[in-house]
Image 1 (cartoon, helix red, strand yellow):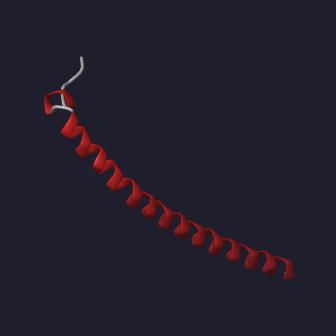
Image 2: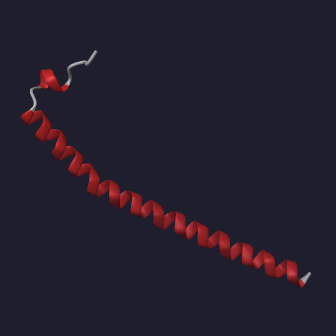
Image 3: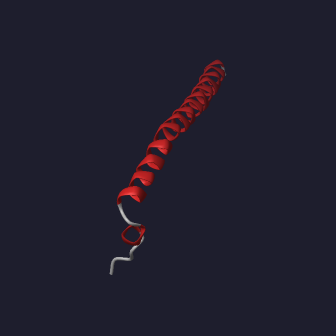
Length: 61
């Protein structure tokens, strides 16, 4: 019985650690998106300036 309680406690600790890591991962995802989104917007703006819209949105068949 003592071993079972020990395993349950360990299991709860591991669940808390996983939750903490998932939150940390989500924070990193938000940070990366916050960095990449403005870069992507800048690239899109540059493409619009450099490439005529007709060619940019032209269907290739």
